[in-house]
Length: 441
Image (cartoon, rainbow, N blue to C red; front, top):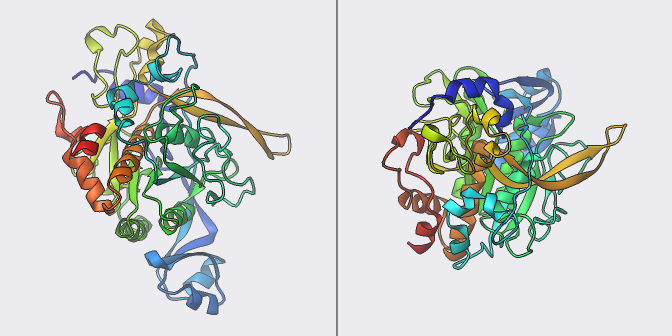
């Protein structure tokens, strides 16, 4: 397995990677007006004069607004809410030609390798619901308008731009397309589960990034509305295990455990830091290392549309950037890969090694008001793109096996996955996603 460009590419082309809060370090700003508080009853906090923003006591805590002195007077454990900024990829654009199936299908090595058209002969994901906790999903994108439930969609940011819109960037629409892009409209691309229902839970805003509390609230909301799976193509690393990091970890564990118990699988990107998560004892990657998280590493080809010579690798090979180690990864799925040299030697085809799907670029007027979006298709890479492959697979499995609980769904996907013989288990956990095997087992 060739990883000769692993570190150099990470340093020089970090903007390529989608979906993690920050690259190799956490850039977070603590809020002084909002706090996450351990609590069993929100009403008790309200009686103490505390303004409760989110009653998440089903998961063991609440999000409150006020001064730190007010919060400390409750004698409850707490930590300030934090806000982090999403890094968006920046890649070349091109239009594939001579497509089979949907016009863009020939560029979708990921769906080809996962045998998605064959899976659709069994199910398209009907009767299931998927939450996309991200930068916003464009409900009017021509490849997604069939799937997005705008009535259930929510904006958790407070920016006033609403939901069902990509106000926080194109990232969420790309993830949504990987899950549910329409396979029957003779336009665009194919999603893994085009028959599922999508719920946009927007937690990223162009004016303030995403807050830890909003993400937690979106997870709890996904459970409350009966989502079979929530996709979280986001994360922060490295977070110190001590101090407030310990508090955030406990709150996250409580939230994820609640979701899993109630039947919602949490498909979470493992991170793009090329980090050994098993031996970084003083740090934790959140939320993918939280309790009950389904942590997903990324794979991708080198040379899908060009001759990569000795560097050529198949779609199931570990991506250069993916975080790894067996106790931190549950499963691997297509997220895209790339060769640094190919950007110069094959400028028109190198980006085909990334993941091709839907995007919607937000537009704002001179006053900063959201006025719409330009819809299209583009390539992105990251564990962000791997997570929705698994979220789509969960929807397919739940469509044919609705009686399975969250643990049973995860167990099925892990049991039917396998580690490619030429690679190490540290990049795969249980193995590489096998959608057909899961549906036929």
